[in-house]
Image (tube, rainbow, N blue to C red; front, side, top):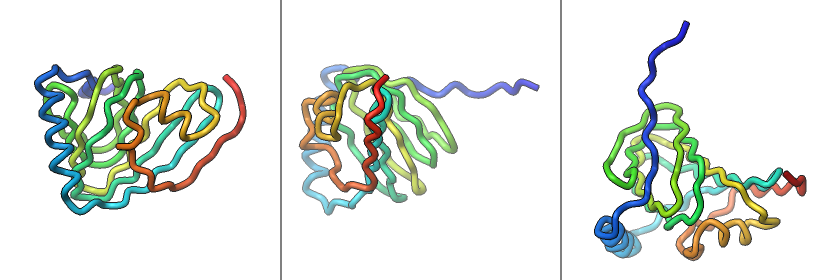
Length: 151
């Protein structure tokens, strides 16, 4: 039996004014105490997957992304999509456009995995492929798996 399901939102690039406001928010957030967030990395078959394990009650701002990605979310989180805020509970797979910058507010522990096509052979190479702001990325390494298998 097919059930009608609400479609997950798309993550899009914000307009210039919104991006400027997000940058201002980033600056304010960096002045606050920072929470360590475990990040797992997988490089396999021409893909890079980056999973953030975010505790409850956290505000997380993402770097500006150059590449289209898929974002897999499991948990309870409010996501700024680039145009509005949407609360997502449970499991969601979201298309993410290049040029986007996201903001997340977790309500419970939430796991977010970003997947993109990549030619990288290291985490550092992968990070430089998808953003020009790798210094803004969480560096709290969880696991790193690089299989060496090509696409």
